[in-house]
Length: 344
Ligand SMILES: [Mg+2]
Image (cartoon, rainbow, N blue to C red; front, side, top):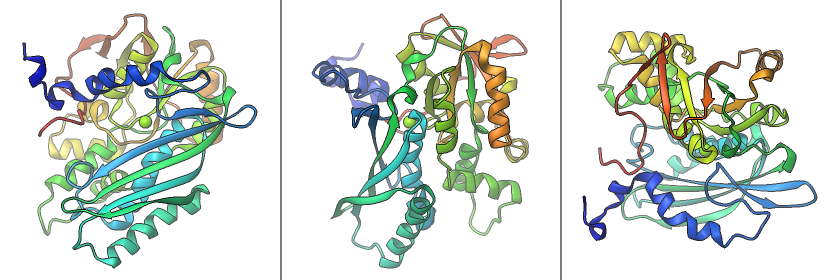
């Protein structure tokens, strides 16, 4: 057992960090406010409307590699990951704030491209940048975004509403972004990507926040808990389990994966199940649905979006237990999942 005073942030991990520091802030909250612990904070607005607020910090060398990612993609992605949190609550994003810590060698042309990528997603989603802050940075580029949106209070979906028996579903393919990241990190100079590889890299760099899907699903009473897939379903499901006090079983053969990911897993010897379950940054939505209503909901989803709403598992009463099943048998996927404070 480590001496408590010597504990480092790497020992705590992100879950431990939040568990240690959030309770004192949550205790003092006036009623009607939802604070730390979900995709967005929820603040009373006008009438039934609530204001949703989320923020994300992206650092060169941790969340992206400035010398690999195009500034256009980085501008797009910085906004996209925040809008995804608003999608996760069923809201409509409206406003954003952007703060940048910029190393001195940064070229203006780089920043022009960054903002071109940002604006492209802004105009597609109707979001307006209202302000922020800029400062010089002696080391890495750091990007902080705050996004705000509105939602009808009846339609906001939280992580805490999953119930045993609910069907667990996702709104998109899993693992593509992780596959793209592996290719980016492993790529040798001069080596050209195949079409399948390019697809995965694109999925990593240009995530699409599932805003319409989020609003559609949040307006259905049978949808109970919802969040976005940012750290990978293995991590993200544990957040739903923790908030809702339940467990989850996942049917590995039902995880939706793209043909491109299957192909690249075969070629590169990656474990397809582990990439799909533990790979982060897909930014689709993860939800739980009242079981008797799931089939009809999936049909409606298909009619609206022309793609399926894959069921990947079920909520169980076994508090804190995440079980993976392959052909009905429990299997161990190994030490997977993303820890923000891991040193490697
Ligand atoms: Mg989120």
